[in-house]
Length: 193
Image 1 (cartoon, rainbow, N blue to C red):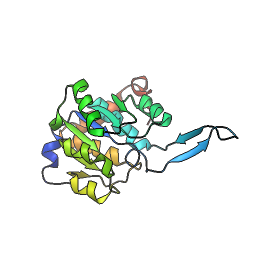
Image 2: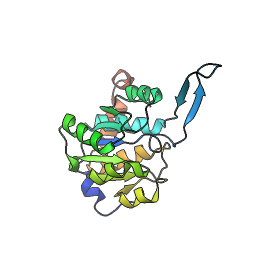
Image 3: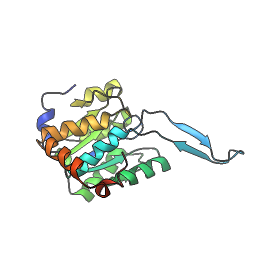
Image 4: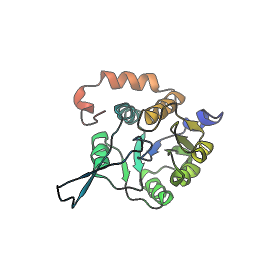
């Protein structure tokens, strides 16, 4: 679903921020004991390679990217490092405050920001952003708040759908795609899809 004003909103975007569980993942949380005695638990997440390439395309277009999530996870820290995300906020009980801190660091404002979330804890982000987005399987309240709803579910390419939508609205998708494909591998090798 694309609301009539979504394209105009997408044209001004310079910063794209994602929730993690349910947006960059399918929302499933896997817990594994780190030892036989179970003293520690490791949280494992699965990320879409399609979303990874989308974030690489966003970076090539000059967009800043990041995540704001309530949970803390080493899996996310590794993925964020590999994708070279500009902003990584884990353990954010108040996502709107985290967003405002990122605006200060990025030098961006609400109208230049797109946020994608899937559940009610993301509503403060979506309400503050210039472009609010959701994966296809987001909660009904989130879909109602979004100007753009991806065709794909969280963890299955929804972030990639959003990034391609923004780049096409800005008229740069074809050029960014060409540059992404022509660049030497060393230029994007650290950004594992």
